[in-house]
Length: 326
Ligand code: AMP
Ligand code: TRP
Image 1 (cartoon, rainbow, N blue to C red):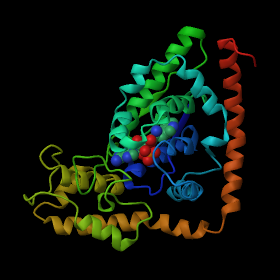
Image 2 (image 1 turned 135 degrees about the vertical axis):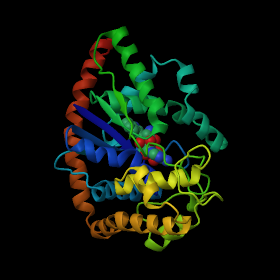
Image 3 (image 1 turned 180 degrees about the vertical axis):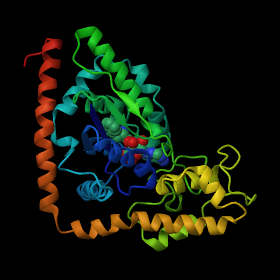
Image 4 (image 1 turned 135 degrees about the horizontal axis):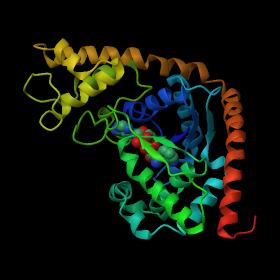
């Protein structure tokens, strides 16, 4: 079974990225062949600073390592280094109806957020994502809930290609976390936790202990003082319970019992302690790898070589089927 997933190197990484994606990758790494990508070509579809991009790539890869992903087991590489991804995205674009791309929720949301930056790359984003996935004959794609629609579109594109030109692609399936597939903002708990919002809305994997505590202590809750999961009526406390449960691996019911008749303040103190403890490794690894750029580059080059072999073989088949010269 083959797994493929990726994260955009856009700056800070938050606990939503960890719980929705990376934590699932860790479990899958034990039982499947995994490819984990740093999707830099996707990162440039929203406003970005060219000078920061290489720094963000390095930081993202350190986060992968700090989380416990293992380059001896899995393949890691930078998307833009394998040109076949962009090439295949173009070819897939010729069989994808425009309407499918226009109806994607992420496109609509990002277009609304950056009205001055509605570029064609943003519209074509799911085509590149489909090519990332399909080029490696992927079976499962572990992502957060917000990416489910894109994986489903990749499935549709694979089927359309196979029906039109003959079978080349597997139809990939999405893999969602049972809990933690959609972590909400700490300040506005009816919205998804996201990188670019107000800094108090997310806990970053590299946050300092005092910042983690500060953000959890001011996280939006309600006036009831009852620690109970009820996503509709108590979105704030429910989100904090989900985070507690995912990091402690305890069921929510058990946590509710543990904090019965105990106020929000103490619960938040305990959650801060738990997060500080679990995220300490990220800052530690960041220091450790600060001057090990050569080592990081070596791992990524090795991964690239392995990925390139698979990508070239798939492209050869695609071109044959489409009647293009090899
Ligand atoms: P991105 O930062 O958009 O490249 O997302 C990287 C991964 O994190 C993807 O699998 C997303 O679906 C996942 N993700 C992003 N935000 C959240 C969130 N708030 N909760 C759970 N998963 C998320
Ligand atoms: N679009 C994904 C996100 O924003 C990142 C991504 C790009 C991805 N290509 C992928 C995820 C392929 C899984 C598989 O989170």
